[in-house]
Image (cartoon, rainbow over all chains, first blue to last red):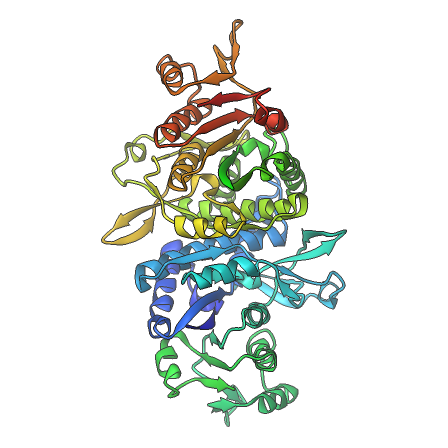
Length: 281
Length: 281
């Protein structure tokens, strides 16, 4: 079977306006995962996910408690939310989709000279508390061989959660570094390294829009690479939201990927039939 | 190659008297992992580990912050420390032992009627703060197929961290439950399900002792199953410490395991040569 990599947006896991108890969040994960039913008949699946709100919450808890307990660095917090959300997603996939699922703690190589370390841009946390952290570009997904091995054995693999754990190379060793990688860019790297057929970005909107939020906004139903590049240059897409998805899509298609779909979890079934959503080819 | 399952005691990851910054802990993981060099030449390896201090720290941080952010339940905290320690151990294995390593988020089936839920006995946390939580017996390691798959592909697999994430079956679905499984019992289940040749329990002492702490204490160099059972009945071993290791050893050998070694990480090399440590056969 061909391979699809599906990226679950942070909001499909935690509602931005809810307090986010584990019950509420698992309920939401359940709902999101249930929309994947039509895909598992046609594709092998790797699931990636955002975790901005979760890393932010953990960081805040660490700060509040720092007199009593040492704060853990961001790369370690990234690994903790990979465990947390991986567990919830994997268990839900088994309960709802009746397929074996597995979570792989995934490290991603970044460049210590990446300009992001001097100019942090990525907001993490929820409404009550936000922090801007460095978001370097992913260079290579390190734990790729185990992911490949498990796809071949027909597992649905949860990987690269929260964009992966950022590590740098230092005297021939891998060492964690404080940052949060954008999950859309990391999803592209992963999908390209795995030679996936398709990426599906599940997000808050049913379509990518031209002139989004303006009176003349228009859903984009089909885009080719050149159109996507043109719209990026025209600043059509929001930083940290739709822009990384479109940039990642362009890169994925240039590297040999066949198709990208961007839509909401609720509309995924219709999007697969070409009736809703934005297809980039 | 034959398979050995090595259980790393919580203290080989965090020093009970240190504040436990990430740097100090990773340093300690490094040291512990470096002692595994002689084993990787002879065995395929699965590594399990304790996480009592880590789960306790997380729980405390959650409690301190609970007015601002919802507390996560214990099973979710278990999954978070699996991510955290798995990441540190896996990266260290690659850096120090130069072998591919992978962390598998591992769920373990328990019985909701386990008497542990009415009579919690397991202390978690560090010196500043402890809590007694339920510690049900592991019935089955659920994520076993992916662990088997990866062992065959020559990965060193970090699994069942902190005793695994406890889940129960409820109307045909798996649901997390608030508890912390003893890592020694979970290690036995894992090793037996994987048909491992050997379990190695790495702990704070070089030997299992007869009359431990008394003036006539004596290191036990070799034990057979019947002797081990006899000493358990005589209450020779401390609850929550050496007793679960010996009980797990007996069960492992009864189920077809060939050998158990109990020693400190520092003495592992000598123990493999039969010069130090307690061998149960």
